[in-house]
Image (cartoon, rainbow, N blue to C red; front, side, top):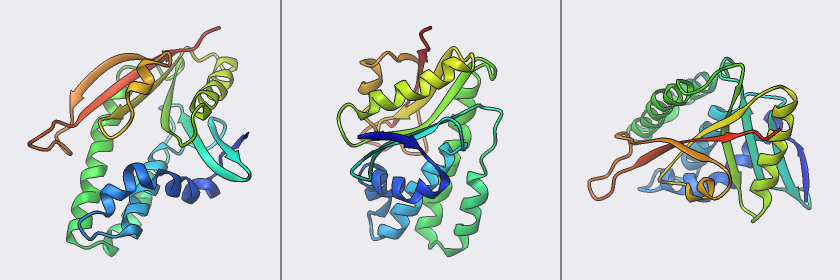
Length: 200
């Protein structure tokens, strides 16, 4: 397996990789695979800050994991991208897309408030489908961030993800809170903010 730079041209392949985790839920209730893939692409574009903190890991040329990070002073235009698609959505899709947007615009600042722009790097998207790849990707970002003087990696995750991964891989839980955008009556949807000190 090989670690390579992740570019904007890789976003759609990353959306396919993310589809089993997030896309199937968005595609449910007749909304369709196309909508599920678009919501995965929107999630990735939320995390896309460009170079240099963007890497993928491939196996025989196929992406099996990727990681995206950036400085919180950077802007990435993910909502401009979504705006171009909103007129094509039906009523249910529009409602779901706007709920996801609201989740991002309310959760992001909660993470930013814990961070220092000159010392802390925002790990904004992270997925791996092969055991061990995640550690390699985090190590790659951490090594580069270390050369730039960063002291911590910050990220947020939620109930839809394997958030226990972070507890067992050097991340410290900073805060958790219920996310009303996705809470269901039978089970609360919880968002978690994590920090990983960069070792020198």
